Image (tube, rainbow, N blue to C red):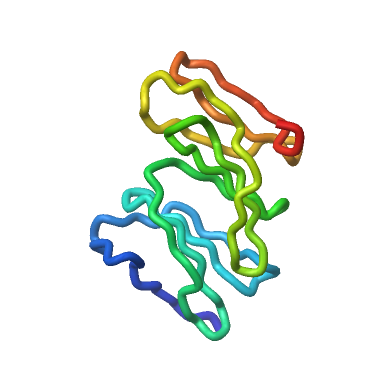
Length: 134
């Protein structure tokens, strides 16, 4: 049966300041990846038994691809970090470089076809990358 599950906010964040932005099942439905927009937190919860697996506070924007198990994180330093999420763990793969002049957050997302990363820039341009080749 379906039931409502409300995970407590990790890392002692005030729950009133956090909006759930995206939720995705990962690891073939064994875990749940939750992105909190205002709190800038990404968490992974094990589904059965229901328990927190890990959490990280990020000063950035992020995007998740269910098809590839890839997490994009705009890092506010030198570009977009690419992570692989598997077996409830996160592994850094590479950085897709962006020349950052003004340190403000840009939206990131996945494009079509699969394996394309998209990000905005300081000067209003849009950059597309092949995630594998950079």
